[in-house]
Image 1 (cartoon, rainbow, N blue to C red):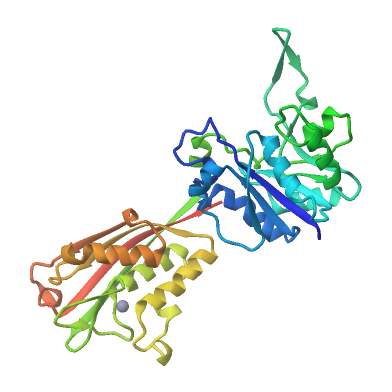
Image 2 (cartoon, rainbow, N blue to C red; image 1 turned 60 degrees about the horizontal axis):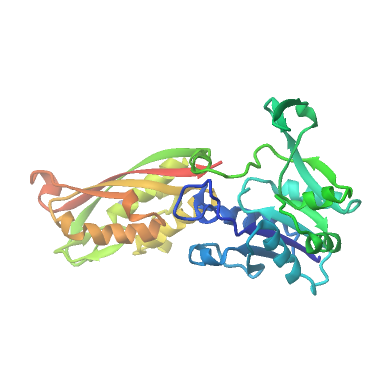
Length: 371
Ligand code: ZN
């Protein structure tokens, strides 16, 4: 398997008005560039994945480590970057090469498999789509009508026989916007296959914001009795207090409410169903229980969007521990601190909670999935 996947990510993206270059901006829950990497790895078609980045963007590089990834620095223009990657592969007995723009995160693995299948009989395979709009062309300062059924919009990934593309790239002196242009300029055959309409190029910030997402909400409630000679745990941290919360586990009412709210949003029953009162969970730290639920959340491609907490108790005073609890929750839930809110609510010294004999908590959590 001497096939390589090159991702061109060195562009400056001048139409993209953001401090962070678009390749590294979050899109559908992960850096834009990561989408292409994940698909290339998941396809199991490639020996290595070469990512060509802009040297000045090094500080933004936020992709997951993987032994298949090789990072290279690009050149001034697109063709300089792709030639750098092709040069790198010169002594690697490379057979087939895929070239892809990092700004297209939405292609399917099916598309790359289809490209590869077609490469058996052809030296260059390129996906295309038709244009939906009426199409005009400016020729000698005059606008003329074009038959849109004869206009092809090419996409990436594009794939090629390595030797042929290397030769063409090495001899090329003019600016190109895709590698297919090199073959077309020399009247060489390109096999065009049907691309994907969802495989759009992310060009503006608006393309990022308009990503389709699903949001679900869940509610959680919990109450535990306060008893002497027990540590008090709230939100995953130990809090100095005269009593601790009685329970099968450490009694962390905040974490239990959060777990139930996440399970509610996931439509997966409740904490008691996932962690029964058997010996296995006796005196367990609730952080471990929450980790199990967060794993389920991530497996289902969700992430926590925001959390709003009412901690109902006469004491301890929430304002003293608010920052520590929010820091702890931020780590446990993999969510930014500014997405978590913690309110303290006393009960005017009424009832068991008012007499510091119990602590209750209620939580609403929203979770998000990008589709
Ligand atoms: Zn509980």
